[in-house]
Image (cartoon, rainbow, N blue to C red):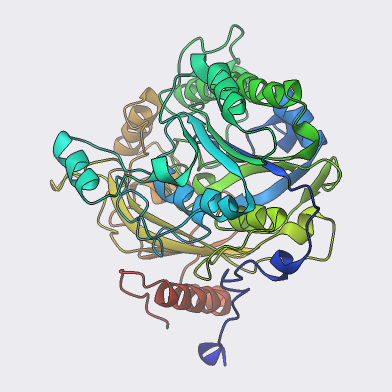
Length: 477
């Protein structure tokens, strides 16, 4: 019976580093370059099939490496998603449930795993989010008093927050300081395409009339105009991406460097950032590793943000701590047999440094929800369903005002009404992603989906238990 089923560590995404860590690595350890775009959903790159978006540099990079078509972050906002990428653990297990929390000093991360192997490590450009945010001097003083600001000790080179105009300078600075006889790990954080979306971000802006509007958004002029500005920032980011690869080439480092490009979470539109729907979690992921990864290859295996650091550690021959729950997909990169994830998991909590507790507080400020996704189905468990929905960051944009007005005048399509304005929201959402990839039709509780809903609910229950999640467990019916 399904209720008595015990899930394996692979099914729950608890694969440690798998046997890949035990495999020998080349005597010359690979350099590792991790590049994150900010608030960037799948499929918004030319190499993912977007017919309008201009991203020639990333598209060329994709032709030299592997494109991942089903990569998902562990949270739909910046801090918790990055926690998972660097630690191989869920944000809950890493104890980063509050947006402005720093990574706990006793939770180690990828650059620390690489240090015993001689790696020189660094972080540069836009804030990396893992040393806590400080809304006031008191907060910072408390964190400093308790030794909670730690990344000066975790990496060799730390640039906490530089503007785009200093990208090339910071790259040069890192490579000048790196000893030539040591492999390196460098984490580069872009600002684009994070909201607000600048006007005239590029010299030839995208034409709103040509933008392919996703099915989870209404096709209205203000949505198109906002998407066009978002596209402009992705194109601007593509140029900055080329600067990073140029720095590698100028130092003749590209041939022995694993380059990972990934979005940190989804775009700041409805169903995107702050949402456990796919646009909030489904991000671009491309990996180039000359001589190992087959150029122009792609995969539809489920990949979690928790898997990134564990895989890179495996490639370097490093051993993460036993607490990691990510699973190495190094065999996939090598073109070897790989048994993929059955489920990926994600969580939503607070967003931003502060949250209001007024009656009209919206779910973009804070929300408590969890999800589990398989190849075909997704279950979302909403623990604060009374919070009214609003998009994160861009709720002041004209497109949202237009959607709210259409809702009030009863002219908004029924699917968008249910998705964005139902109040209270359902405690459970269940989606058949093969039939409804836009997640507009909640089929939770329908008899024909009883078995897969029960299966995913049980998987989520077990995951929450083993992660010591603080939320009440969903009821299994």
